[in-house]
Length: 343
Ligand SMILES: Nc1ncnc2c1ncn2[C@@H]1O[C@H](COP(=O)(O)OP(=O)(O)O)[C@@H](O)[C@H]1O
Ligand SMILES: [Mg+2]
Image 1 (spheres, protein in one colour):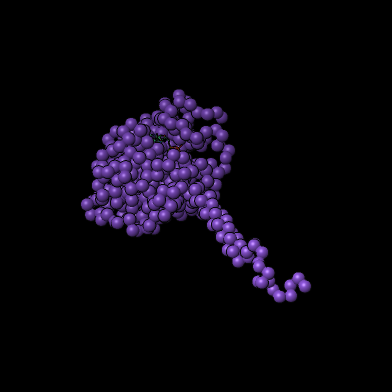
Image 2 (spheres, rainbow, N blue to C red):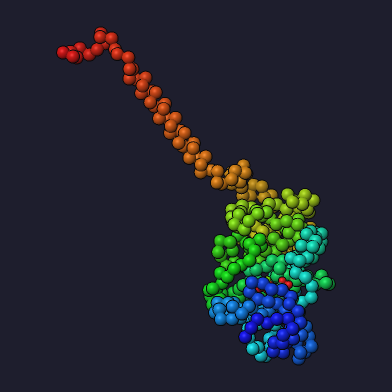
């Protein structure tokens, strides 16, 4: 067996074009000779053919995909025979949201809400099926020429019913942490609120053109996600509608308990933002003093140490002086000497 290439035939499919190539797989556009319809094939790279954990993950992606039927989720098909491991999907025309963001950077509030509503609708369905996507990000959202979105890539999705069987071996590289919820950063597997967090982050990015945590490197960003509140959208886009800002902040709250509890709740707000009551967050959860004073954490230890040592030195010096005053070094006059001494 060798790597498949565009132009190859694979079972009933003629591979016509390479659509994408990731660390795990190549995705081809193909024609199904039996039906004449256009499909997409996700073919894992050769090195994974004998990897048991990967095989299990891929099989789960296929099983989860096959049970999902929704206009905003890419259909996974079930061909009768396959001579190697690959996934067959309906071919979804369009570009990934990542590609569209790279071209446009920002969307109008209406466009962003329109896209978020479709994703949120897909999440309502998905969560109703007991599935959490866990890897929502602009690369895994396709935007069609008619404006319809389709979610794809259920590679690390979790089927709640199969949780215990499938959790093992899932620490595979997770890609960008930009859309990852703080609890995922902490190593938790996440639940429906993890998907809500990712959707909120995408909405933030579509509206402001920036991410809620602008830290330059992945580690700093992950630390900030766990320890700090996100930068409010109005700090990036001053004229954002406070109601839209509230929806975003409710979706990306650091604490899952403070987030929308379900995609249904979030969808209701996206459908009618006018009903959303912006919450005063200033007194909610006071930000740590260091954060408010903008003092970097690394500076604290040396400063405290210097203060402690300085205080100790000062005390020692003061005590030395006081003792010195009690014990004068000049000889006492003879009259003051104790009687009998020196005799
Ligand atoms: N069914 C499809 N129709 C059209 N393009 C697709 C389809 N599936 C995947 N792609 C393209 O391939 C890219 C990678 O697919 P994805 O399933 O996310 O793979 P990976 O698990 O390697 O990230 C997507 O961003 C999209 O551009
Ligand atoms: Mg992907």
